[in-house]
Length: 297
Image 1 (cartoon, rainbow, N blue to C red):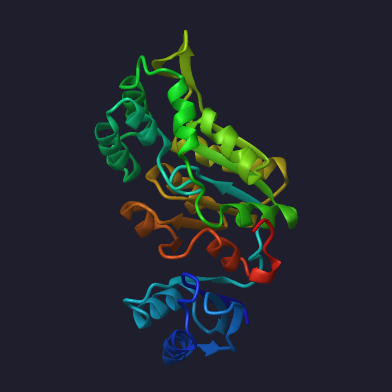
Image 2 (image 1 turned 30 degrees about the horizontal axis):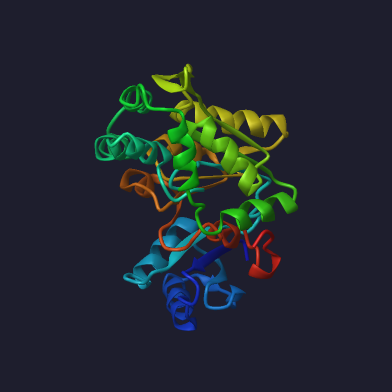
């Protein structure tokens, strides 16, 4: 069949009954639905179908599974496995907003986090908001960066996502509105081929309150996706982009599989695919990988 509906839940949270309800919802609209294929027991399964568009199937399955902690991704079967991964860092590959955590070292986390929240939901210009937040850190000792890094945790599934896609030959890039101090360490730890981000300026062991220009923001993330795809001779349909904030939205919309991951409301509403409940392994299931194929766990 030419389309597939993938259901993904936190481990142990997906039942055969849920699959049956989704299958019945598609059938009620006249679709031909095939036999479910479990990608991981009680965690992820594919439901092949024909006769509906992916958007129609997505809406029908969501209506049938209202209230369930399950993620639903409907797409074409052809070309599911992507040849490039472009990932945001903060609240995507790592669990926190590193700038907010760095602000905690200066005792102003709440003030900066409030600006971050508005910027990530598209209420503020990203570049201006970044300059404002960095300016509030003027004079903070550079050693605070290392203390922040020591407390930074990876999002569950990050290593498996990158290692599995690398093993399949995909180029993996970390593209962040955050800072090179963190993206370089995250890229090395997780296994990204490269990282692109902003640079905090420092002098005499303290932050100057400035960030190097030009700032890597929303437009630059999209431009990086297009440039890296062109370098590898890939169509955008062959790429996967994932992020949570408004500055990720253009690259998410442009990618062949664009995923809003535990995203801000404006991003979740606009993205074609979203993951609200699962971890980053969900991006592998969405590409049809079975848990037995995962690397890096």
